Structure formats: C-alpha cells, structure tokens
Length: 178
Image 1 (tube, rainbow, N blue to C red):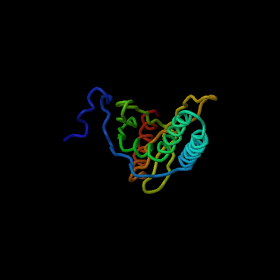
Image 2 (tube, rainbow, N blue to C red; image 1 turned 45 degrees about the horizontal axis):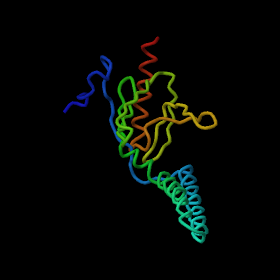
Image 3 (cartoon, helix red, strand yellow; image 1 turned 180 degrees about the vertical axis):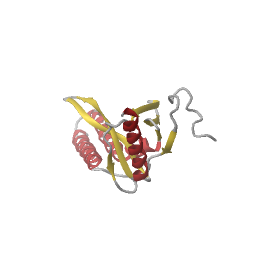
Image 4 (cartoon, one colour; image 1 turned 135 degrees about the horizontal axis):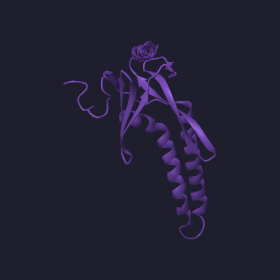
C-alpha cells in the first residue's frame, strides 16, 4: 500500500511523505508530572483528613469532602497516566514540506495539525532512545496570562535520522530560494 494513500486533499501538489512514526506510549515521568501527582496526593490526603474530622459531626456533611478527594485523585492519575495515553493516540508524519501531528482522543476527537519546515524553523534535538525533536511552539492561555508549549515529535525511536531529514528539507528550501 502506498504511504500517500489517504492524504488526498491534505498534501500540496508535489509534496511527498518522507517518514511516518509514533511516539513511545510507555510510562514515563517528568519533573512537572511528578509535581502534579504529588500535589494531587496532598489534595486528596487533606480531603481524607477533613472527611474523617467532619464525620464526627452530625449528618452527612463529611460527604462534601468526596468532591475534593476525587479532584485530588484525578490530578494524581492525570499526572501519572495522561501523557502516555495521549502518546498512544498520536501519529507523526514528515513530508517534504511539513510536519504533521495527528491525535485521536476521547471527547476531543480527531485532530490533524501541520507545521511548515522552513529554513527558519528552529530544530532542537533531545537525544536519547527514545528522543524528541522540537520544531514549533505555541502559547496557551492560563489564568495569569499564557505559557509556551513546545511542539514536536516526542519520544520517537530514531530521532537523529528524522532530524537529518528535516535539515535536508531546510537545505532544499534554502537552495530554491537562491
């Protein structure tokens, strides 16, 4: 079967697929996810203590703590398991012009985002097995403004080979511009 199959109407004329892959979907913790999980555990723990103390009072007032306990457990589980779950539902494609990231997540559904690879695209390699190539970023709104989120092919098996293809795309663009 041709790698181009299914890409009709998405790829530009003359654009070809150079590489397709998927991120490693295994369990992997980063510093930020550890902090999120620990905060969730502390939040849930505080809720348990509050519920125990409130259960000594009259009625079912202690049950209001269940909401906070659930939020704490949710934060803990999100921090531990969401990144791997998201990666298991992600696909990557590198073409002669762009990098594509496709996801198929529950509730959110299917998304396909493309990022042009030009001579000005900053490429950063986080080497390793698996490794990551960062090639774009976006700003996401937060309560206090915005934060930068790096975008790339995360936790792929052979990042150096993919990076080599991306730098060749950049060189080709430079040659055509001159």
